[in-house]
Length: 297
Image (cartoon, rainbow, N blue to C red; front, side):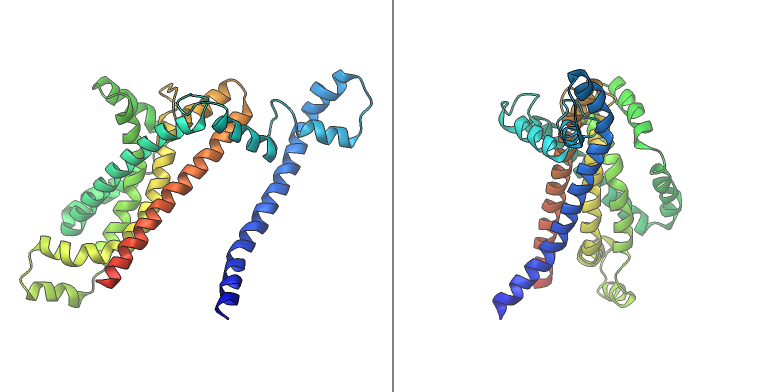
């Protein structure tokens, strides 16, 4: 009975994902055929001077060297080639760029989380600072990161900060907001009777924060961290664009666009999605461990 239940549960989890993946693949192939057909006729079939039919058009559309929309198998082959055909320290290897972007993301994530925690604690303990800071915190997210990234990079560059630091600041800029908003709500989540009990025991503000508010805010913190680390990855990739960086997934995207190499662009996009998934799964793992320890305590 238990085995049947587990098999049913596994099927219920896997089947919807498999069906959606199949649907996306079929739509992708259809889009690749439609978008590449004209180019295949003009650059492949017509210059050959031979009669052709729809099967020839389909084959040519899904095997172009520089397609408008690469087919899934073309992206998969280019992705695999970039991993196994070049040394890991080569700029042609996607893992080389993953290491650069991942480092920037993690540094920005740590800085953004720290800033968000500090701001949330300050806001919760001071009504004046809440009124002064919270509107500006919200307003900061209305400025497109593509607009603010060059400004931040130029300012920090003039101050002598180069390399990792300016890009990590852009990642931090996108990370701190979800952490701040979620932690403000989480730190205010304890009930009145719980806060009154802390007053009864003559606990200081910092004792109440450490013993009551922070533990109560953990269920609010980790979902914000998952959002924050994904946003940090976006910020790290965006920060690589205006710097003319030669390393990082953002730089890989930019190089692919310069040379019209759509396969390289799509391979980098797939790798960035996998990196984002790995980072959010790592945060989710920490969340399970922390909340399990909290429930056992």
